[in-house]
Image (cartoon, rainbow, N blue to C red; front, side, top):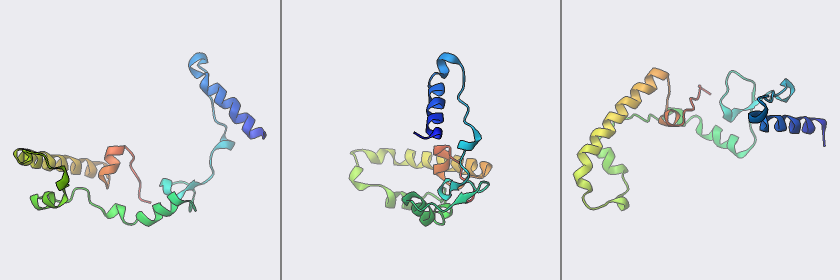
Length: 134
């Protein structure tokens, strides 16, 4: 085994024993990455173009995703076009007005949060991951 591998194993052992010993494992600077793959969205760090599938996929969608407005106006026409008709249940019509009301309210609050925090997509709010402009 390489000396770096042995060092990592020792650090791992310290990390596993942390709850018993109270001694934290401290990662030495030489183990830190020097460059990050582009799909990680770290514009303030050195990056490289990832040749792997996730990097290729990232580059294909990065120009599309930010332009998606997750708070586009929600209308009854949009609702009728976007629901799955195979998921209908008897009596669903009784809940359409309430569902429309709560969806509109949700979109309004979501839009306010996105504007306040400078977030572009609903997925960033739901996941807790805020992507800086890449």
